[in-house]
Length: 94
Image (cartoon, rainbow, N blue to C red; front, side, top):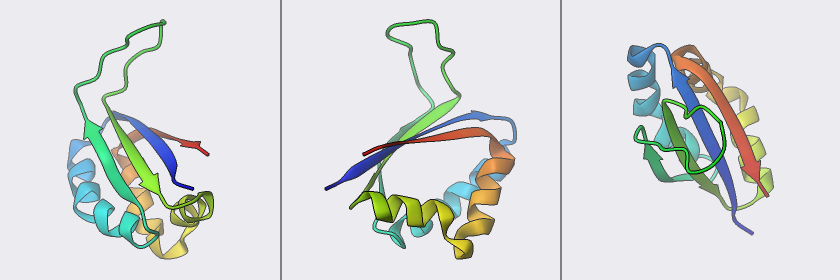
């Protein structure tokens, strides 16, 4: 069953984000993941939440693949780049 991960970020270091984006696709693919959509043009439709600077919807073949992607020690440097780009959150919808 496909699972999705909603990634949001409040960007504080655009240079690191650029470096992260150069590696993110390959890192996702290692665990069968892909980007469905990513955008910095966001709007809150309902509620009082503050819109993040960017968001991405990721797809993985299953929950195990998504968890393996975020925990993969070989991808620690890629995840470190993302975290150094700003405050990010990952929400898995399983």
